[in-house]
Amino acid sequence: MEEELDGLSAQELLEKRDGIELEIREQLAVLEQEGGVGMKGALVDREGFPRGDVDIYVVRTARQKVLCLQNDHKSLMKLLEKKLHAIHAEERERRGPTDELPSNQPVTRARGFVIVNQVSPGSPAAVAGLSVGDQICEFGSIKSENFQSLQDIATVVQHSQNSTVRVVVLRGGVTTVLSLRPQRWSGRGLLGCNIVLPT
Image 1 (tube, rainbow, N blue to C red):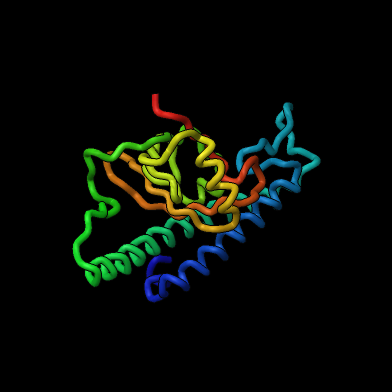
Image 2: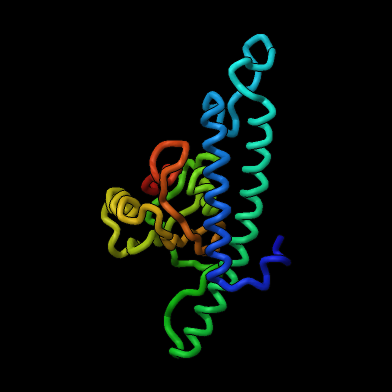
């Protein structure tokens, strides 16, 4: 898929991303209509017989589509990130040197102010690429310098529904920039992940 996307501009990639996310939401809605089985719900009853209240073919097809779309989304986001980095690099060159930390570079001083401890499959957080154990160093306008409580993040999420939020995470000593889109989905909340304060 990366080859066919490589020639697209960042704007075209953003539009394609929106299309994939819409398809994922549509397939998750199908799974919700089929007895709310989601991506992991059982398709057999306690006695091992196929459930009569669920169209197993429809569920398996929808699940397969979601998995394929999530893989496509991952590839697209990697490519989009590269393009955006290239654009920002050009911009930085034009403006001259700054103290800004390049993303995806090893860091020693950066430390997340909250940690992701749960990500629901098929959620906006999962689609964006958040993983359990990620330390969040930036969440939209919230950074370690101005972070006061988890309510700060909740406020950004509420004000950013259906918009893209820039999230910088520290994962394995490397910073990664993600694009997170808080929105309604088949599960609870607008993100589908749980974050906690570091212990």
